[in-house]
Image 1 (cartoon, one colour):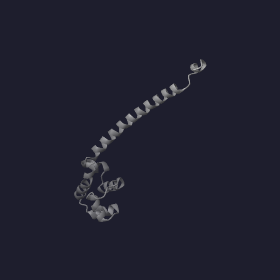
Image 2 (cartoon, one colour):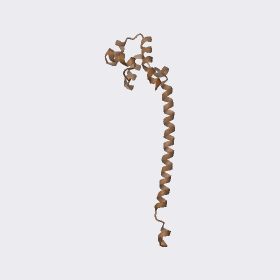
Image 3 (cartoon, helix red, strand yellow):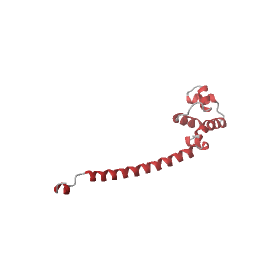
Image 4 (cartoon, one colour):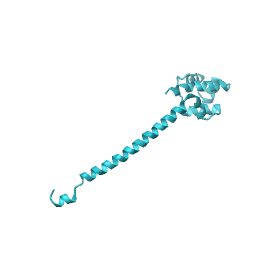
Amino acid sequence: MKAFNELPARIRQVRLSLGLSQENMADGLQISTTAYGDLERGKTEITISRLATIADIFSLDVSDLLADTGIKEEMAKLKQENERLFRLNSELAFKNRLLEQRLEKLSAPDPERRRIGF
């Protein structure tokens, strides 16, 4: 997703606006300065827990950190699609149960047919 590619630049932007160095951030994350630089350049993926720590260092909510990257919009779209698919899946599961019940009735021996020898 394009929005996730914008996250490292957003982190850099916020870090610079707060006057923090990469060394400050690396210390806060308990990683090397090189590892932090790779994270900020997008060479390393940012985990959710690391993102939460970065937001804490910035005194922001994670959602505020994601606000300008388009990730919130992407996540909202994914949530809507997930809800749509869940509803569709529930509907199909219900229809499947109905069909199974009908099939069970059709395949069950009919007592009337048994009585007359069929």
